Amino acid sequence: MLAERRFRRRRVDPFAVLWASPALLWQGAFFLAPLGLLVWLSFWSLRNFRLIPDFTTANWDRILTRDFFWAAFQHTLVISAVTALVASLIAFPVAYFLAFRARAATRRLAIFMLITPFFTSYLVRIYAWTIILANEGALNLLGRALGFETANLLSTPTATVIGYLTLCLPLVVLIQLFALSNVDRDLVGAAHNLGCGPLRTVLTVVLPAARTGLVIAAAFAFILAFGDYVSPVFLGGSRPPTLSILIVDQTRSGNHWPRAAVVAVVMILTLIAVLFGALAAAYGRRKGAA
Image (cartoon, rainbow, N blue to C red; front, side):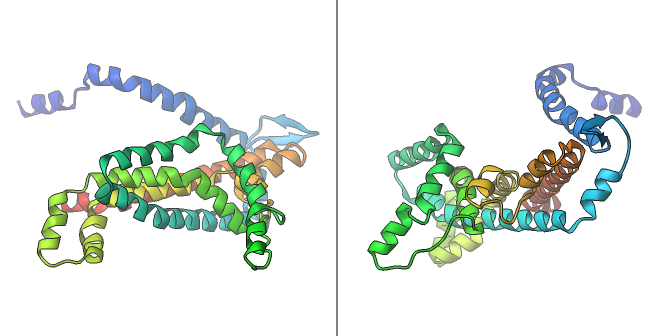
């Protein structure tokens, strides 16, 4: 009798499988299959500029034992983490104001303004930044008019971070806004009634209650920055190179797609590790408490 009950509990619901099948097919066709092909390609060999289906670890040895790869990996990791931190710090006051202080009409207008940048090509926005940050650009012209010295911002990590923020900051604000909008207002009111000031209320009530959304927003910023190619090239001047630039360099130098596949696989594995770490930070403690 007990075995029969367990069998009934474990039986797969065909209706649930039917509704889940489009997502499973999508993930299989556009993520798992390309990822498997990419891993397989990383073991191919290149002879006379022709790809040979093979199984050799020479590409992995070549990439993972070179200092230029680890320098690019460290630079990409650090600049993406800095972007996620800066985006989170800039977005939080905006999201907090919209969630707790702004009127409904102001909030709707702000959401519309945050979505509007996605209507424009990201490449066009980066080209606009090259005009603003150039030596003779709008920013330096304004600085000279105010009596400041000219600052060379293009081809620097700072310009790259500005490009990354152009890409991810509106999304981070939106995710944080949705997270803060779901915070129980009764908890905030109870904190004020118990004598907590605004800062202490934010630190002890708002941040823990919205932790999941805040962590996911930072993870999105990191993921978008980690894989971006446009900003490091057009704003950062490819100096120092990121992993995305390294992939292009490997394909340009002798059409070496297997080595580029190695770099791409390492990037995907890194992003998966970061994503699982973010999910653990967002949900782990709650599961343990349950």
